[in-house]
Image 1 (cartoon, helix red, strand yellow):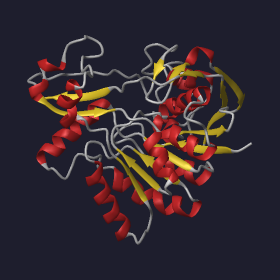
Image 2 (spheres, rainbow, N blue to C red):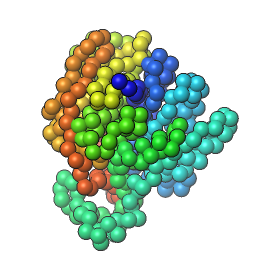
Image 3 (cartoon, one colour):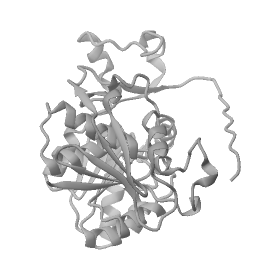
Image 4 (tube, rainbow, N blue to C red):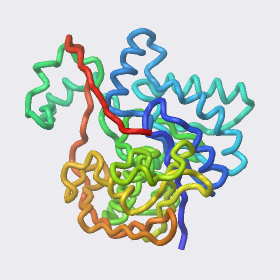
Length: 333
């Protein structure tokens, strides 16, 4: 049965890409899917874009690929990244300039369409509700102060880029797990209405999207027992045509992959495990099974899905005069 091996990349803007090198060199992966965009990150990128209209993407893109491409290209490893942020076309230009500098000829696919700031009036006129998801407040209260609005796209345009032969797929705002679902659909030939397989793929992507969080890097259990966190490995998934997956990490890396580290990541940002809403499928996690099958190996099966929602979530930023302060307390080490 055919399978595909996908490595988790960054979990946030500024995350370390050193563990990705280990996944490429020792993890026998075919793809690296890298999530650079927390919701706060878009506000940071908007401030960059206000200072310089040629910015608005995550500037770790070129340094990261400059270090990883020399080891990835001989192995045929492809990259899917949402580092385009609020300005994918500007990210494309700096990436193409860097590729030319290094003498590399690679096909780069750009995914657009998430930016809806200029379309809000059109959408409202068409009857689309732009009420706040939690409070129900209408967008009119902040409409004049909005500076960006980005819809969470699904995997479909990413799959189209891969089908077109892209070595690097560069996106703006997409659902985090869609970065991982796209190569599964592309390689394994899943149908867009095969809800159970799509649900499995989304769960696997969700487990991988936060880099070292799935391998014990932010473990809330017996974190003292997690080995060699200084050299933590990022998660790797092997996914078969059936949807069954095994989560692991590169040999010789630190961290741990087991039932506890993965179930902690599984519930990250999940409001209702019976209805984990994504652009491609409505996932039911309550049918999921995770089973340790060896050291740092967990089999994931059983997710079920329903048809995708009719609407997409939008993250929007507006100018305001409030300053927030957050404090995070961490125990040693």
